[in-house]
Length: 197
Picture 1 (cartoon, rainbow, N blue to C red):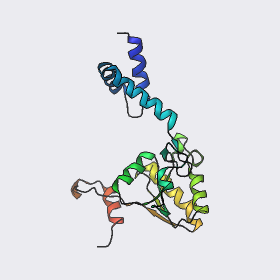
Picture 2 (picture 1 turned 180 degrees about the vertical axis):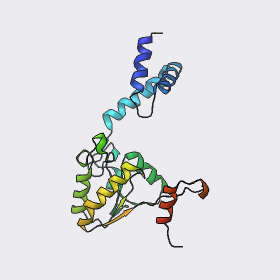
Picture 3 (picture 1 turned 180 degrees about the horizontal axis):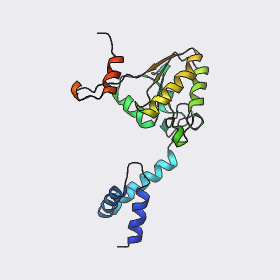
Picture 4 (picture 1 turned 120 degrees about the vertical axis):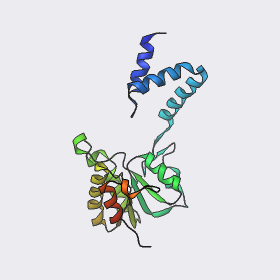
């Protein structure tokens, strides 16, 4: 066994988000232990996604076509756009089977400290979609953290003058959670976002 090739794989795996050195080592040894055809299958899947996957020209979801299946669908509500940070957020919302409108993926969230300014996100493209389409509502579904809240506030400011209804997803207590264990910010958001029964 050559430490050079193992070390190279470990170093490459640590480039993946959320993969530290120890996890990269475990994955490297796992890959070494599986049959060659399984390892090649993983490698080929990576090559295939790099060759075939792209961002939808309209919403910036991941697709193999120029326009994704959601944007092309005649069954979707074309008057509502749900704005998310990443394609993975879109998948989670789609899995609920509750929302039937269009999406817009920003490909990140505002973070001036990290150099992520509005120009680096797909915000101008969102504004153009709202201006040119028959959009009646934009649902902002950015993450409930500092970057997501900053992004939501910015989007609200630039979209309101366009005469479109701006809504924000509700957040608060998780189902099955106990109020006594909730932090003050989560509990206050739950009270602020309450619904009539």
